[in-house]
Length: 162
Image 1 (cartoon, rainbow, N blue to C red):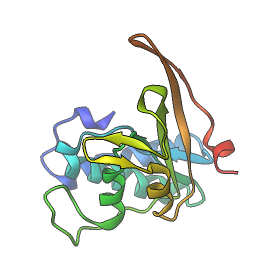
Image 2: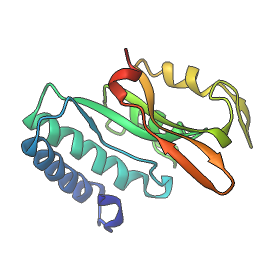
Image 3: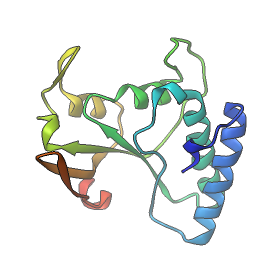
């Protein structure tokens, strides 16, 4: 929602994310708040600002709400790793890490086995990598490819983490 806006800085993105988090948690107290969905790494700093702001905004109103870092797909776990480690795509370190409660993943049939996902850098156990972050993980979207169209189905995160 906010990633379509051209923020001047990570700080501006944080402020907008914070306000959205406050509005969301004020409107209704959800047990889980998913704060991301398949972001573009070229806008990493802006995405980090939006995500950090949304988490802080939600927590300022609903400290018991669980934060779900969502929308990762296939071999694209580096985004979550950088957020958790306080690093970014240019290799710099020492940035504020982002903290969340649950890691959500999107798995689609054309992406193959999540424990043996193969791409340009070889084959990787994505599930093991997600588990190394020390957070529960689950699927919030899955689909079976049929021709060029995907038929999607989501599984509630609450049942994925039991």
